[in-house]
Image (cartoon, rainbow, N blue to C red):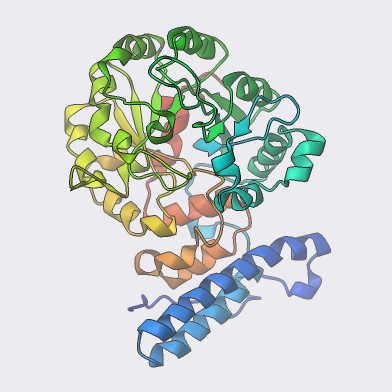
Length: 415
């Protein structure tokens, strides 16, 4: 492993950092988490180095572990990793969930509740089941709004509803629906906050799909979200053409998951083949291919390579860069940034709550961002600022961070 020769400041006083003993108790408590996460991340890296590489790298790994611990006490500012946008960025890919408490109408099926992922997702969303039962599912949005308010860069977030598994007969199959977050719940709850925006989800298999679509637009939805592989949606099904034409008429974009799906208990990955998006594109729908179809194959071809020719064919095709720093997608962001003209179609998103260690860490990307930037990013406490800084370190242009607000007409309409 070759580590870029980046100079790391060792004079912490000169860098503006104060000794830990002089920090207020609440700040010390806040800084504890990045410290722990950094040490754990590098400890795992050290373990694999010991197993797989030459012994002389052990010393280097131990040095990095030590530095990662100190990263928690350097300045929380973004410094050179500030995108230059001020507090104006829109995160257009944020998930919520619920268990039906407080008459939310949300539910998670038994397969997902019993899945090993379930407790981790609760933890990542900063809630417990007891808190949801006591305060209602809406507490999740309360905390989400507070975290975004504390960000120095992200001003608003699009909160995504999630329709269920609907059969070809138009019936919602609750047993097959792994997660359900109704439109009216998201519309109602996001209206309580200045920094949360309503993103709808409508399965086109529903008999009243077009009526739901028009209602969502009236209620202020800025997009429609699909995960075809868990919702039983074939984007290439020509029966959806009337739905697509109304989407184009209303000017509401489609945010559709593309590529392999591993966040749920089961999925039909063939439905997330990016080439299946040709049909809505041909009908004039603005399509945002979530995650740029990273990971997985369709018909023996890498999904990321599979989507690239579509950009030359359709000017109404965009992508979001959410989840591209996760450990299962290493290298994809740098590959995407090297594709000529692709940054002009990119939008910023996080795929929250999938923003936690060990799924994401700046230290996984030393070959792309170097030790200095990994150090800087790891010391940023706010999840959104940390994600922004990490993507700036990769070289994501400023326009990418601004584009979602413009495309979704959030900035112009003052939402």
